[in-house]
Length: 116
Image 1: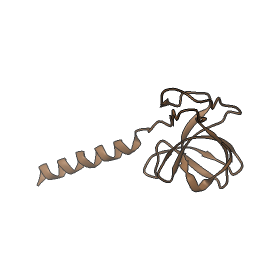
Image 2: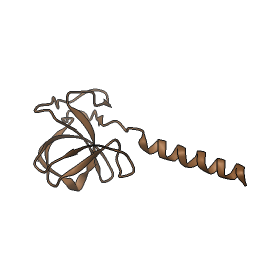
Image 3: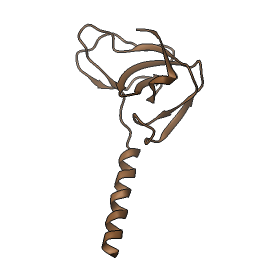
Image 4: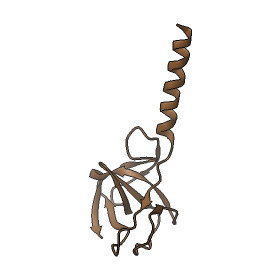
């Protein structure tokens, strides 16, 4: 019985750690298309380390905040924020966002597309 409890403790600890791991926002190479779009936060939201509520919150954005949208996974959008301008020109190879400002994930329903 004790070995089963130890196994379950290790299993659930591993699952919790997996959700805590940050999932990088990716800049996608897509031919001649720009890599990002400009948006605004429509409703205040938490920024998360990965696409889903199971990932830890890393920040908050107020309604009206400007964001740059890069990646999409289900109902979640990978964004960059806290920076006025970002280069969105086409790239040749997909890579993780490493530009200025901060990055993270927000629910698609909390954003409004402005351009791109």
